[in-house]
Image (cartoon, rainbow, N blue to C red; front, side):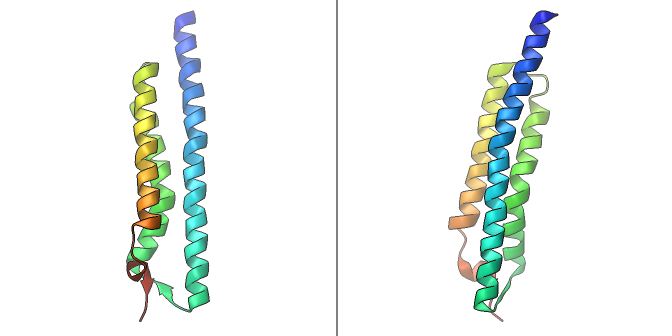
Length: 112
């Protein structure tokens, strides 16, 4: 029973550490949203449908990936759970960087 408790405590600590890392990705997504909206307002143009999708997806993706990783690791031991969390965090980082740097401004802003 003591071994099971240690595994459970380790799982909660691992989830808490990665929750903070994913929360930082959400914070970056919110910052990107505020930056894109202020740039849009200063230029006097609106966001396109893809622009709205991109900034909202930048906020929602880390949340979905964290809870997906949390769900997949619920019955795993420490090492596989760590790998799953690292892969999910890497995907979250790729989504954030791709939306922030890899998206053309003409796709985000509506210049009608």
